[in-house]
Length: 217
Image (tube, rainbow, N blue to C red):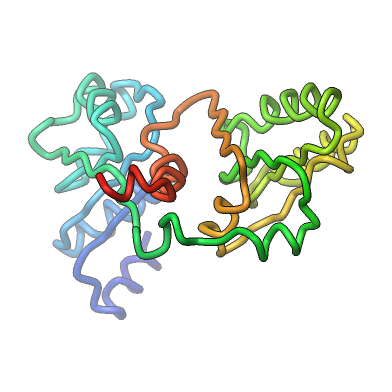
């Protein structure tokens, strides 16, 4: 905390913005001690025990990614007057119907139908559910391919499960990519099988923005 306090001073920080438990305590105390405004963001719908809601008192303002997250915090005793819900937006300059997925399909050698999961690779995103579906579909549609796009703490574990299930030929793990609009354009089906804590996914509205109906709305 003392190192962070020195860093905030050296960088002439105007605001401290925290996102998880440990940094909210350390950053919150450091920011408060320097009389800086402190903002805490909450992105997931996991319940917060009242005894753990104390850290939110360090924040002058709490940002949530959905109204449901706001409800979770209010139920935990956080002052609703300091909470603001800010759902994710869509960058329609990047995600629009004219984006082509042809280059990516050529790069990965995709010829048949393609389903994809675009997400941080961790347990809550439901990669096991995706692999279950991939195995079942591949058994009746051998030309289908399945992309797992993204990186994260669970990457190696998911890759091991792909091998253990004998799905190396049909499941392609791309790792981290920046060309997500092109990835989505290459897919026939986007899948988001989150099993818990998803508040407001950015992937779904970004994918929907590729449809002309969404762009007109």
